[in-house]
Length: 239
Image (cartoon, rainbow, N blue to C red; front, side, top):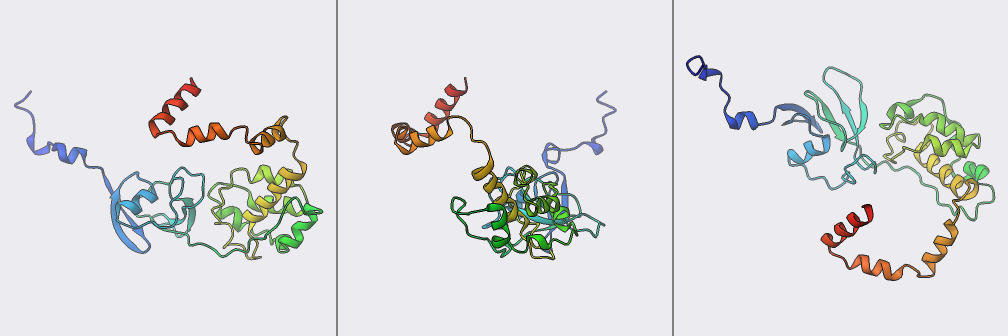
């Protein structure tokens, strides 16, 4: 068995442990990175200093909104950089912050939130039905439908439609009517929660108890714990 072993085809331990590499283009420059890592990790691997765009790293905060294109495909797509893997020949770059107009409001002072939508976001009913916002959404949300539900006052449906929205903002720069769909969605969802949604039993009692300082001692004790003590306490609660 040993005599038939071909040493010419043997792979060294170092080579066996070395991950396969792929070529990607980051902001127009070519790099070699390990296959299978996320776009965010590819930035770190290649020495890029990520000062904006690194958040939860779990696909929830929307900070790492990214534009990318795969090899031989002219279509530019969107994703969250912390949860999308690199591919050989891929080109990508982080989306810059977009200066969308964010309305300021106090939901407790609005007389009619459904009509006030048109004062706060007067561009909302100007949707052209181009569906570019839906195409740009990395969460596969039917953004266009959500905007129209807001316009027609179905705020409950809006809150359900935008439930998975991470506020990445990729729907905003593609809108030819200058609508910020994510901001319209969050306004309608907040208005529904404050004005229409049935509140869980005991919610206001618990809020009042917090305001009265009933849990102040517990918070002080928690804030003074070390990391190890917090882990042990969490494990005890879970068990």
